[in-house]
Amino acid sequence: MFEYSDRLKVLPPYLFAELDRKKQEKIEQGVDVIDLGVGDPDMPTPKPILEAAKKALENPENHQYPSYVGKLAFREAVANWYKKRFGVDLDPQSEVITLIGSKEGIAHFPLAFVNPGDIVLCPDPAYPVYKIGAIFAGGTPYTVPLKEENNFLPDLDSIPKDVVEKAKIIWINYPNNPTSAPPTLEFYEKLVDWAKKNNVIIASDNAYSEIYTGTEKPPSILQVPGAKDVAIEFHSLSKTYNMTGWRIGMAVGNKELVAGLGKVKTNVDSGQFGAVQDAGIAALNLPEEEVEKIRNVYRERKKIMTEALEKIGLEIYKSDYTFYLWIKVPKGYTSAEFVGRLIDEAGIVCTPGNGFGEYGEGYFRISLTVPTERLLEAAERIKNLKL
Ligand SMILES: *Cc1c(COP(=O)(O)O)cnc(C)c1O
Image 1: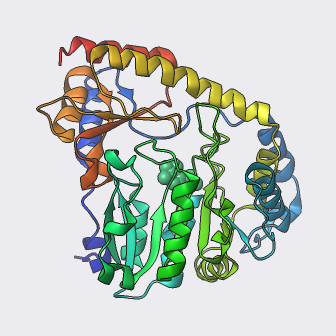
Image 2: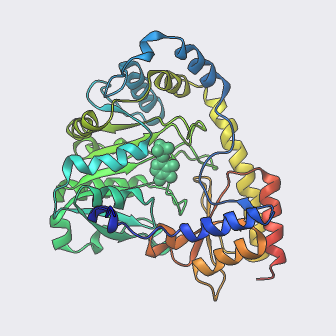
């Protein structure tokens, strides 16, 4: 009786629906399903953050409407963290805004700057929210392919001139989900230069900056001199501190861009719960050793799973970033066919590469967010499939 709006009707098809259905079916049949599909840390939020949250609950100031842009204390903690981690100076008053998880900010941002007819340059494969946010704002997403031969960095020179002219925003996300590809400062420098020349906003999603398994720390785009003239960066406490359920993130950078996002948010939400922001302050002040402990778990899982899967003959894109493995599907399969076989015959849920866009075809993604013994069990089951 009630017809969906056109903006809902034009959304890309939900490719995971069939996979979800199969997963539920297997669980009902009593299969011990191993879910390597979702990128959601399995470890608990560190204790000092929980303690701060418990204390913050008791503070009546937190029981009233929070500030739209977030507590100044949280924004100061963000600015201090950016200074310490990236050497980037931010004014907490005008260059930082609190988000109800970075997904919220990513989805809302185009509403502030995109008009119908404007193009939003979206990488592919990618986190689906970039495209969806563009569509909700009435803009037109334009696919920028990320190819393995370019280390999954976009080829800016291959975007047609007439597209660049209409482009308002370019989304980037490094360390990258789903491919695990790292950023390089050289690429960031080139991108800032290109964005200034073409009057395009850079929207960088840096949710995985702390999830590295080598020794090299990924940079922020704001480290490039002059980046603040054209860039906003979205960040999140979700992945760094095992806080996906808390919904706390931030956007930082160019103050007009931050203010535009703030204007949208003022009109649609009422800010994040003060106690969650207080917990976020404790997270950002957590000693680095605590985060290193979390990284060490991913280091071990990545090493063990990479070895196990390579022994079976699977081809993994080698990277020291994120908690994902981006793997070629064996010859003769599409992504959907192979992932279908994994759930049907091995009880393993993985994400088909084409779920992240057409250029993800030929790959599948494994999330290292289950204990090592479950990863090894999954590897053993795949081995027994005799691919
Ligand atoms: C997990 C993730 C986020 C963070 O989401 P939150 O809403 O902050 O929990 C953002 N971007 C990408 C690419 C992600 O994978």
